[in-house]
Length: 410
Image (cartoon, rainbow, N blue to C red; front, side, top):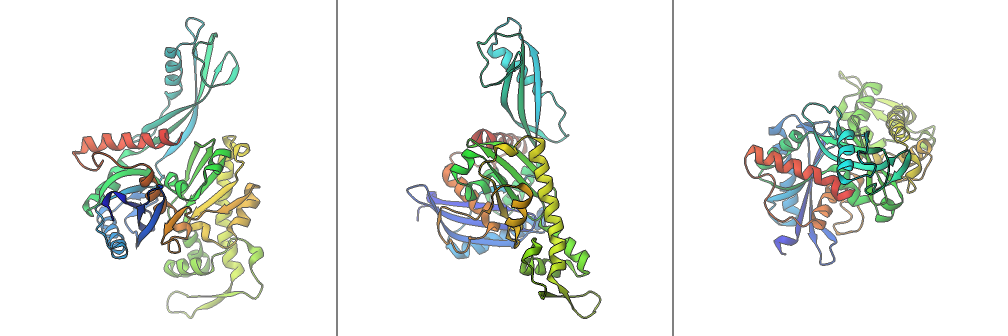
């Protein structure tokens, strides 16, 4: 087994750390040969808050993956949660100096659209022109050489916190893992669960993790929008814990075993045993009560994303419907609920077009880890690892990689 044919994806999530080891075949496909997972306690909403705890979780997951594949893991392509990634639209307007649009005019109008306030600590990762408007004529892709006096541009601006990526990399380095590359997690998940046809005709991917739920919209093979909700699987657990008066650990177990978000699927005589607190005996509670609690939270998340799509005029461009992945897509009835709210086709996305240990990763919770391995196989890493060097050099390399996320997909 040649070392250059081995790819490793490291998904550092809010509730779990997942390591996926793959072997790249001659045709470019990936066979999964090792998987390791460990509980994650050092992150909150996708951001590292305790490096020591994160390091231990990474070590534990890496050790498990090494046992399965029989190889030593020393570097990986690492995912970063999108809680700090923000994107929004902006418009710029200028007067054309000589009545004929030049390259300089295009640069000036894009610069005008980019003159917006961004949060302290964030960097502009990309400014993507959507359309130019010349004297009221819209949908112009390239206005250079055209005659006119008023030039406008609509742009999509993406910002992110580079320091969040640096803390992820510090955790990996201390765990003995060199970072080859970093990738935004919803982009990695799209590599594992979306087809090229879906990306071409328009698709909305919703990736629900423990701390955040991320959305990305593709059209004509390119990203058109990203959004992040600071809500995830942990919110469902806390809702159950409060609603059923049971410890969060028990609420998590009940959620995984009996979680449903579509009341029509529940039988009247379906009951669940719920442990109590303070030494009180367990109670039998109708599964319909659990479902009502979980369904309310799922509806809130989907309604917020629907509002995001409507606000940005994206609904009409999603010909391929909605794909759900990540932990929250394992709820029974999730497809029925989502299709009712979005009023379009919905499916659950599991890792596809892979070989090897397919049965082990045949679950939406592995979408990001598998996607990172596929991304690594598609983009053969060459050159210096980005996590090596002094702080300033690492900062610049991380910023450059984050900017490349969107240039690779747009």
